[in-house]
Amino acid sequence: MMSLLNSLNGKLIVSCQALPDEPLHGASVMAKMAMAAYLGGAGGIVSNGAQDITAIKAQVDLPVIGVLNRHYNDSTVCLTPTIADIHGLMVAEPDFISIETCFRPRPGGERQEEVLQEIRTCYPNILLLAAVATLEEALLAQDLGYDGITTAMYGHTPESKGKHLIDDDCAHLKTLCHAVTLPVLAEGGINTPEQAARALRYGAHSIVVGGAITRPQNITRTFVNGLSL
Image (cartoon, rainbow, N blue to C red; front, side, top):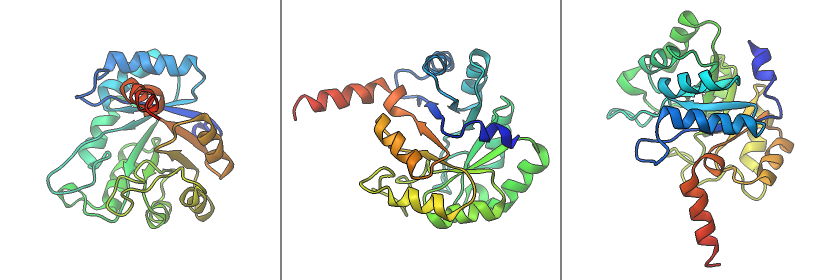
């Protein structure tokens, strides 16, 4: 199975997600978006929720990273946060699952070690990506036995709020890539091909791009704002 992760080395992974309040929300639309990404040369897809994953896998023959964005009242952990959420995703048989990995309390008091043990027992062939924000979380993920790391949470947690993965020197990305032996997927705030190429040069295994490709409302807003410069 690790050969699947190796096959994504140097590739672009497109995140095809639309939340309920967005105009493109819906499994059939996301399947078309994934097909467009496939035709454009994408090497993989990120998909949110079992319905979208199922629809996408029926349309494109690309590795799919499954996630579930879900909020609980007793925790700030929101990316595939619970064992039940993971079981729900596995109905759609994604190739990977991305799980927020941190030191903050998880919903229902679940422990990170318990989550990993449950998945490895029930789904021994699934590849697991740790979605982290800090170096300490990346090192934790490596110790726990994840297969890879994604920077998806950088800038979205209390510890990293307001920070950007692709800044002047990409210091955080470079630090992660040198500190761990796991493949690092650069994800979050990558808006141009130049930024994607820079992330690869600094050691990223793969590049994940979402809104800059798959959220037309954000792309339009960028152009509209640019008219006033």
